[in-house]
Image 1 (tube, rainbow, N blue to C red):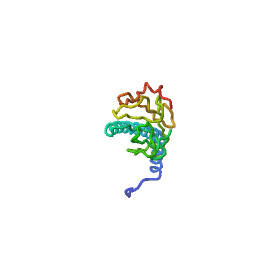
Image 2: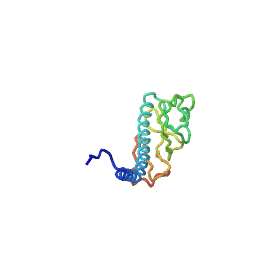
Image 3: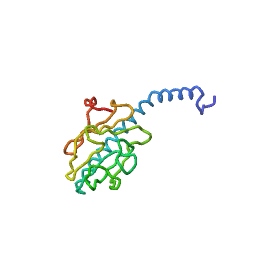
Image 4: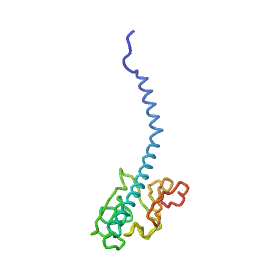
Length: 174
């Protein structure tokens, strides 16, 4: 009898069926994992920008602003970027003539992530020359799945951010 060197058609069909079943079970979980990872990444980027903005406000001895932007110039209610702007004239708003210090993407790979500034008087965070924010509030990072998966950061008067725990999720308003 001759030795078999290949797979039979039945063996190949069973293998393909097993792979299809594993993919059908695992793919939805992978998509949820990727969306959750993106929310965490934006939350981490905002934390990093907060530290950077504080240090720049102290170093430059004038206000520094964090806000969302649709372009790389001015602030907007929503946008696909987070920007840090040097508020040279200390008027508490990001004017087009003022220099942008840093910009990071919020929207990547077609996700639908948005940033809410809750309990702030406007959609931006302003740091004074002492490094303290002008007001406290909550920064909510949401996607199209709502508050169930949202991340939130609480900004205190010292300029420190605290992440919301799962038990505080009811306080998020996405």
